[in-house]
Figure 1 (cartoon, rainbow, N blue to C red):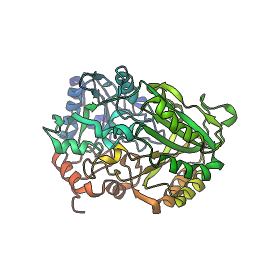
Figure 2 (cartoon, helix red, strand yellow):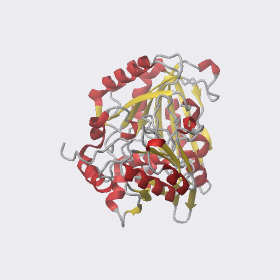
Figure 3 (tube, rainbow, N blue to C red):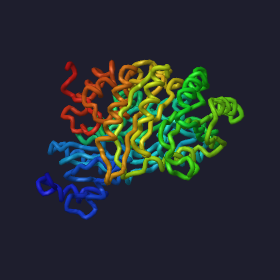
Figure 4 (cartoon, rainbow, N blue to C red):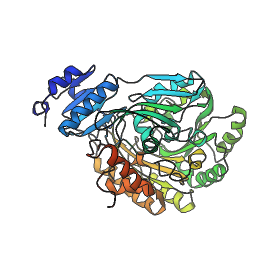
Length: 465
């Protein structure tokens, strides 16, 4: 399909304050480019919206013609959900305004904002909400799938802090959602993905954070991982909620923060963010330093905004990415054995195996309190395959991810929907578990024709399947 087969395209273009990009435009190929270079899709139209009214107009146009809709915020989805074939892309990249109300500790964030936008605006007031660990990640995708990050153990998931939203639904209406007006809709937005419409504004509860945190990474040789990981397990067992850590098993990347002599060497890095009193944090950081003999230690007081951008260079746009993930309970000895064995077979200096420590505030919300399905997990492991776009063997990297994932499956206690990739409808249903029927009912009510299906899709016709 191309724009010449869609009636009313010229009228749509005239009605938008933003731009309507078609395959005939010179900017089309650039406009359909997303972070993951492995994604190559050809939308019929790309509406680069200037505001909520543009989004509503484009959605109504798509609904009338039964065109599938993809919503592009940051374009950082590994599965490429910000693009569709033969449908319309709602490109929100012009909608990045963040307005902070420090007295009420609220942030109003437009749907195309990136986490760097939110961090800068909120930290000007010494406030923050849990955001992604890559600052170029879009607010929309991360929030709607749950939102894990450095602050989650103290402040909860991003979605847990979503208190209101404005959503353009499948009929082109702009709906204001909060716990009073539409409590069930808000419940679904807190983890149900992009299934229910295009969110044009998020309202987040904020927390006192920083502006200085005790943060950085402590790096050990990967050969020491069999000894370091059990000691790490003991250290975090009773850790305060202000103590956020992410293990990362990989080849040391060639970035400025890492000495050249370590580039390409197998390592286990412990990324830490202590968001409480700096003096109190030193006790736990000393514990991380005592797990073995570190080859690098960058932990020091630093601005939270800077730390939030610390790993941006390790996952640059345009490379090819493929991943899988599972939720885990504790890091038992058998789990550690599988992780170390497969991480030692890593296929690319761009690949990584981040392991997120959950618990704390993440586990405090009762099961079923939101659409997010991983409250009970102790950790999430993301098997992050990545390779150069030219002259590389895609299947070799994908096979490493899949084999690693299969080896972890016996230890899985669930899945985090934002880290799904190509697991299909069964994987999505597994991620939502007991929430599935309730999510299907909401989907059937607000998007019965499944126009918003470029996501980890909840199909409205399969409630009892």
